[in-house]
Length: 599
Image 1 (cartoon, helix red, strand yellow):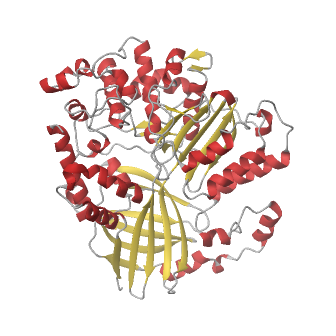
Image 2 (cartoon, one colour):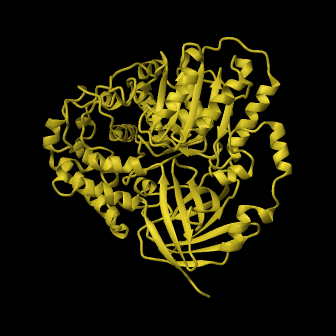
Image 3 (tube, one colour):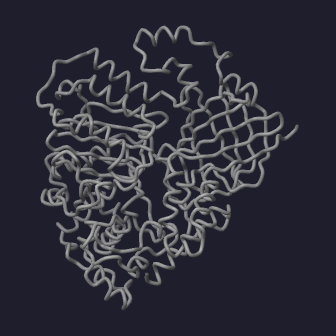
């Protein structure tokens, strides 16, 4: 291990220790500057796909209804949004409450494939070649030792995830100069010899685009990709030196993700114009590297090979996917918030069971089925409005299955009046209460997002419950900032937070109930609906106090499992791995007590 890699690992250990000990005020190892922007809801959407009935392209509406029900009821999938295209037309689309299909969503590593498109354009335009060596491109960032160590490392090795570079994603939260750290890193194998997934390879492709063209990815792609596709609402996070992260950090709307998939399907052609060279698309989706079966089916140029013959996939962690089936002329796009890192996942198993079997091969239109199509529309609408809590589901008559039309109408007529609903109890019993909280390091923003955005919590100070019209609000103070959280009962409530200068759209749902001991409990989910992440908070009320239990979805198992790999052999000699995992769990799922403030 070289000096730079040891330095990064020790910094990462320091970060873990600070999270464990709640030293959030001293945690910023990377320079922080707010950069997230507000989503523009006013700008008109451009170049929307045509919509069509599934039957018109040879697929049964009932088949798609069953598929949506299956993915919605599986907690391991935690779907946020999905869109299905056949023959260039949308045949099904759904958002899963409280997420919204017309709002952008983080893509995570899905965007690596878009960075790959930018590299193909730069090659076609003569800015670079695949056999160029990184020590030549970044000569000013390369010392004498690295000139020898990385002498064989080329652009193509980055595209194929075969660089062997040790400096990886953990460096993003500990280092300010990623190019320097990458170029001074050691290697674990000779470039090209093995597949080793590393998002810093893709960041370096982004850095190469800037070095070679003088433009960042966003500016370079604007006239070449974004504008021709009608993609106006797009945001790409920058690293501390102002370079697009490349391998993650891109937010797109669901339909714009589908445009990327359709562009791949059409071999770079859009509205009669060859936006991306066809040869580059073909080369990208040809398998270059094998990998362990538990990771996937092979890798091309910044894109994964699919299980169905000829298919391929732009995949991002936590369940973000653009799946292209050329033989079916189909594209499936989805966003989610599960614990999966790569394409092998429960979600892909379910998708595969519907669309990757030999039997599934629609080739001619079916007779229109108005009843089945209405059912599909109802299922899609239900997903947009449904909530995850059993009490709320039961209140709306959805518990135990998907009601038919007659059952739904009947239950609507017998629905209890406002005064008898659980939310009325919550408002009546909680409104006006204020609690002062014990010292803590917790925050509203999930720790997963805190680390990714370098935006760390300052500790919750107090909370107050208030009535607004017919709803319940929770006013929380974190550090010296105040947040107002609207709670949706039965259907989501929406709002926006400004956390250390960065805006976050939220959707919330709640349930007011009692635990097995009869203690009043308010269960809430605060979904950061532009991301894959949700903060859950349970409030347990006593006569003069409150106990809060915070958790997040996804993240706990994902982060805890990663502690051992991050700590590594060097860290294991410094800290106790098992104890560190225990302490990380305590930090990720904190319990905070508060005392009621008497007035």
